Each structure stands twice: as C-alpha cells, then as structure tokens.
Length: 320
Image (cartoon, rainbow, N blue to C red; front, top):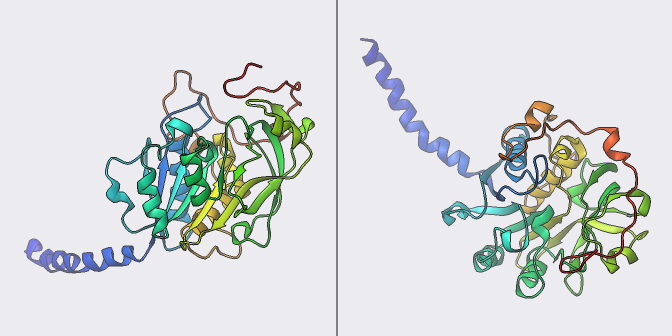
C-alpha cells in the first residue's frame, strides 16, 4: 500500500526534473581551469584554489551563476565550454599553460564573446603568436626577460571607477606580484589594482630584469580589465602565488568580482559575497607533494618581512 502511495510523488518528481534543469540553465556558466600540480606545497595550489573560488560563487554568492571546475589542465572533453560565458585559467604558464596547443579553440571562444581571465603564472606566455593572442584576449601578458616577479608586500589601490573594485577598499597583501607587463599597443587595458614596488617592500627576487629595476618607485598594474571589440571581456591578475591569500577577504572578493565581470554579469555594488575561509578549508584539496606543508591563515608577519638583499639582473637564460 505504501508503494502505491509513493508512486504519485515519484511521478511528480519526474515531471519537475526538466523544469529544475531549465532553471539551472538560466544561470551564467563559468569554466574555471585549474593547472597541473606545480610549486612546493602551499604555492600554486591551482586545484585547491579553484575549488574555494567555485564554492564561493556556487554556494555563497546568491548570484545566478554556476562554476564548473576542470582540474589538472586542458579538459579532455571540450564540450565543457558549451554555453560558457567565461573561461578563467589559474595555472602555470609558458609551455605548461593549458591553452598551449589550443589557442585556436580559445580564440574561437573569444571571438564569440566569451570572457577570458588568467591568474598568476597563467598570464605568462612567450612573445610572438602566443603573446599576440593574449594581447587580444586579455590586453597583455607577462614576458620573460622583460616583466619581473618579485615577492613583495603591495598596498593595493583599487580603481573605484571600475565595477571589479566594487566593495573593495585598499588593502595590503604579500604575494609574487608580477609587474611590467607587455601590453597591446596601443594599450587597451584598464587598471583595476595598482601598487608601487620599492626595494623596502621586496622580500625575494626571482627573475629580475632591467625593466623591473627601472620601474622601482613607479606605480604598476597588478590587475587589469579589457572590454573587447568582439563583445567579450578580458582580465589579468598577477597575484595568486600563496594559497593562504585566498583567506584575505578583499583579495578573494576582487577576484570573485573579476570572474563575474568577465562573464558579462553585473558586479553587486558591495562586491560578491562569500564566507570567511578557515584554516581547515585552506588545507583541503591540496596537491600531493613530496613534502606537505600546513597552511596557516594570513598574518601581519606576512606583510612585514625583511627586505631582501638587492640582486643584479637575472632572468631566464641569464646567470645571476
């Protein structure tokens, strides 16, 4: 008797399922590509970082958006891009960049108005054809031997005239902030986050270039945005080296804002909502490394590291 009573309920659910799927189809789709495992534990945690960002948008933002995460590089099935309004890439660059060998597909997506956003190392590609794609898709790129990538504490100044800065006051963060990008000519990018590097703020030199030396003391672009002629949008963000920084509310908010803007959506006046990230959550889904590190929440000590000893120029292909 109970089975007979449950049958109408089961049939009603079957009828409602197409409607539920249709409602989900009304959500703006973002594809977030996480790169392959990379640096030591706690650095370049692309998979774990993408999970945190997707969770914030899918479960906490209250926005009509759905983020699909592709793990460990370019998707095996490109149908994941169907109906996507934005593709966001958080990965290594150059030959390990997920778009390497897939430029024509990305260019096809961009030409159809799909937004393209690249974060941290994913803004670096070689000059030439690949660099030209990036100038078209997101307005510029990191170029080895020209751009530089010191670790430094940047007091970040948001451009209050741009929607990506909604709800984001100025804030400091220590990261591997790349600067001195190779821009499209004429420059098409609008600055979103800027800061000024100085010797005192740099706590580690990685690739150090004559241009990086020359630009000390000059305001630099650390996040930028492009409204493309094809109707799509592009964003570059040079931060994202340290996984711990996703627990900085304003750091996380400006990136979530950028993802929403890249997808052609309206950024809420107060910025995208998300819940605070706990230390336990920072240590979830980390890539397996030979030596695993426990990741602590950001602290004042991160912002007050001693200045590194100045170095002579060093960059790929050159000795220190």
